[in-house]
Image (cartoon, rainbow over all chains, first blue to last red; front, side):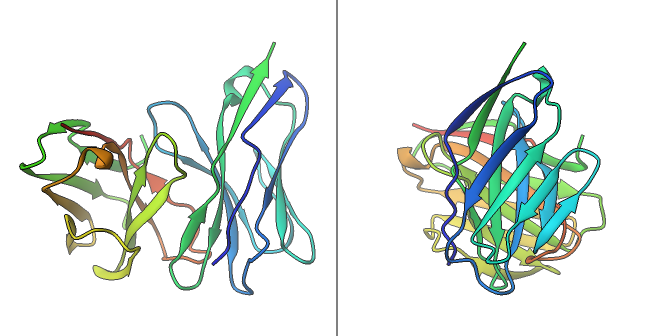
Length: 109
Length: 115
């Protein structure tokens, strides 16, 4: 069962690129990696999902190295509204879903 | 609005009470989930239902009892809870079950306080 570890908090400034890395050393062959964003008093919201290499959508990119033991969520040009908690999730073929502890991102003006 | 609704939004109950949490999705999704979110712990998966069949019970105590009468509704029945069960309970749904089933749509959660 993959254990996911991510930094507790990060600070950034508006307009900067932010990279949040998640460690999942025990990831299995068929596991997927997903990232979610959560604002206070709301449920998490999907950002991006990937299996290997690089995935990009309109809001973020996800980089996964060949060994898949880590993944990096990249948020280009953050704004104040990106201040939130970001969770890494490893989805296992056996319906085991392991969330990281969350990274609290603070974007400053 | 994510298309997943949860009621009630807040619930206070005593340790001897019985209550139920309700989740509803009209997204046509096949998989539904219950999660527990405590202040000092990561999101914890409790139950997964796929096509109304329970496929995962993540070592959850029997005082939590899920029910999935159809693919749109999910309940969590609560009885004789403990104060440490106080948490935010989140429901989610996805088109397909994990892994790689795509994004999960989360409801706003029920804030449960056990006194």
